[in-house]
Length: 379
Image (tube, rainbow, N blue to C red):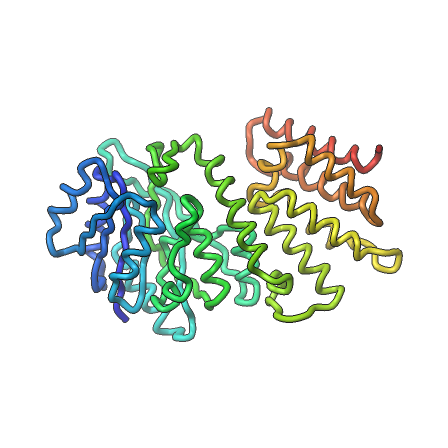
C-alpha cells in the first residue's frame, strides 16, 4: 500500500524544513511528498528548492488550505493519503505503524492515533512534550462522538484515497475548521481503526496562522474557531437526517422514543459547535414530545446538562446572554420545561466547579448558572 503525503504550506520558511526532514526519514518511505505552496511570501520557496526531486513541489496562488490540499489530492498517486501540516514533525515510524493496522484490518477506511504536544525550543526546533491519547469509541458510536467533539487530530490519519476523492477533499468554503469537517464526513462513510503508536509532534506556537484571508494570532484562535465551528454545525444539521444522530445511526423513519433520543444527541452536537439557536429549537421539540405519561427522564436531563459543557456551548451562549436567558424562559411554557431549564443551569454550574480556569472566570460561570436556574423559578 503506497502512501502520498500532502503538505500544504504558507509562509512557514522557518519550520517547513524540519517538517520535511521528518517525512524523508520514515522507516517505510512514502511514495511521494507533495508540497503545495499556497502563495508563500517569505523564503518558503527557497527552502523547498533545496530538496530538489526528493519532493514534488507545486506553487499556486493563495486560496487557503482546502484548495491547496485538494490540488495535492488531484496530483497524488498513492493508494493512501496523509495530510500533514507544515509546522509539525512526524515520528520516524509513523507510516510503518499505521500500515500495520491497515494490513491487519483491511475493511477499515482510515486509521488515526496519538500525538505529542510540542513547542518551539530556543533554537526554533520543536521540543516534544506530553502525549495526547484520543479516546477509542466503539464503531457504532464513533460518528456521533466525532460530531460532538473533535477528539483526534487529522494529522494522525492515514486515509484511503478513494474515500477522500468521494468526499471531494476538504471543503473550500471553510477557511478554518476544515480538518474537523473532513473528520466528520469521513466517519460518516468509513470505519476507523486506532493506532497505538504516536504519529507526530504537534507544534504549538504563538505565531500568526490561518489562511491569508483570515490571518490570526494565538490569542484570536478561539473566536475564529468558534465562528467556523458554527458553520460546520449548521452544515451537519442541514445534511443529516435525525436518525443519523442515533448510535448506531438509523436510516428511514424512527419512532417517538428514538426521536427523543436523536434530538437529545443533536442538542449535544449543536451545543458543541456553538449553534445555540438550533440547540434551543431541538430542546423545544423534545419538550413537545413530553407528557404526564412520558415525562422528561433523569438521563434526558443529564444529556441536556452535558450539552452546556460541550465544545463551544458556553462561549457561544455568553456572546448574547440576554437572548440565551430569554430562550431559557420560553421553555417554561412547555410540559417539563422547568426541568429542562434546571438541567441547563446544572451544566453551567458543573462547568464552573469542574473545569480548570482562573477564579474570576469560574465565579462568572457560577453566577450565570444561577441566573439560568432562576429562570426556572420565576417568570
